[in-house]
Amino acid sequence: MGVAEAAALLEVRPERVRALIHDGRLSARQVSGRWLIDPDSLDRRARAVKKAGRPFSPARAWALLALASGRDPHWVSPSARRQLAAVLADRGIGGIHHQLGQRAGLQPWYVHPSMISALLDEERAVLGGARASGVLRSADPPEVYVAPDAVDRLVRRYRPDLEPEDANVVMRIVRGPWPFAPGERKVWPAVAAADLLDHPDDDRSVRAGHELLDDLRA
Image (cartoon, rainbow, N blue to C red):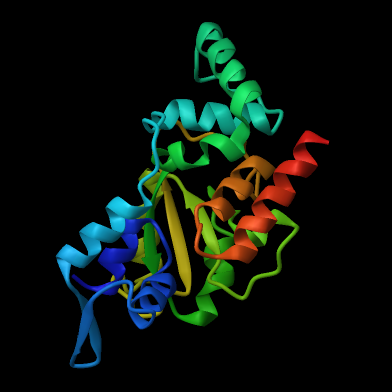
């Protein structure tokens, strides 16, 4: 399995997969300059990082993130909203972030560097991750939430390499309802925090995610 496929399976950046290879935590070999990862090694890694707790459905994951950010999750019923508010009060985003993975699918892209700014300005492209957090400066590829019905159009317009060795954009394809209001250009604070906490092997990201959540609770 290639680096991009492994990154999508583990829900991490391709750079993180290569770091795991170099650290010896994933077995892989190079063929014609490309890393090929042993499937058994990848399966063991996926099981090792799997956390307890059933994933929330996309609609409920987005509702939890909306409630944590002071937004109205209008796509869920009042009874579901009360139930989710109780979960949030009891555990917080920090305690359930590993159950929020269904909110979006990860897709690493490489587009021509001159086109990245235009991609980030696209309608219904909402900046996420470290760059939306306001607490962590990052040179990593920007993370962008997009609606699934916009993906084909963006692929035609930007012609990305969808199996890049070095992604320069990480697309997060939203599952479930599109949660953002017209004109929103970056994700809500709770979403940015969840994005940061999605990288448990990156201490800077984890610290920044918890700092952002602390600011929300203050």
